[in-house]
Image (cartoon, rainbow, N blue to C red):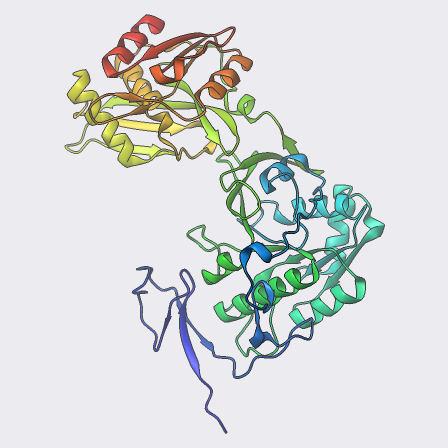
Length: 462
């Protein structure tokens, strides 16, 4: 009898090793290497084609010249939720495989139930549950008021082979798999949720989707580091990766794109969680700008570029005399390294010494700033708190700060200013390169370096 072969794979990056070790030498993560059984054989799954002669994208093809390959422009169909369609890239592409991950309780199943109800009006839809019973799903669907509930098929199944048989029998065009960590393939002896099972299950579903033109939306778990649970190959296999998370106050849900082969990979949209499901937030800037009428020192409004639209947010800073030898530098939603750079630039080129002060920076609403256009807003927020001089609420600030104190332009500057004008802003401190065109209803104050920015601050705040 052949001896069972075992392997050890890192759940974060997918690297494999001949024996177990505490740290992954590929990604330097600790305690992420798990043992699993190597499958002895590969069997055909779903379509009858041999898995060994097919790829993740379907059956193997002959070599052709790229100019000879027939290009197919598949019409997209709507998910039934306009904000979700925008994140997906103007709708769902038939035959695509999309991975939706998020924290427990973030609302993944709720969002997909609302979507499948709208899709079921025109397409055959199937909901596959590996975690909940069909009675629980039915109860939630009725509570949410899901549309076309009589047209949605549901099955509790964890075997990929059986799932694909159900898809074939039902002639389903839109399938939800909840979740990939519960799925198993028969030829793999590992437990459900192991790296090999997750990879093989996702590969089988993707192979079937590309061959038969069926759209799969797969729910995925995340680990304690908020990364997608399972091997890294899972992210490479699917066509799109979307993460659903909640804001710091738990009132809203944010859907962000990490990968999208059919659209922008930096889009985001917002939902409000209610008793009747997810409600779209089509004007998120109004949410993050809801503040008191009284001006406070250290509060500055800036604009971020989220995918294809601007997003207005409030940045807060607090300077306080330190009682320790090592002053604290704490940031929430902003890169701590860029904060240290801003403090150094302010000291060297602005003459403002903050070495004996604790400095705290917060981006209101749980938004994470991942672009450099907020540098000037953070710097002026710190200066405002240091001087105890509030900036009026009708002033917008954006721009990137260089180490030599020059202020560099931000992409899509005109659209950012226009969005501010729509929200009632009347003045904007922006880089000179972004001030080439005027916007009705807003006064543009162009600055080139830090000294001009501090002068502009005194002009609007004093």
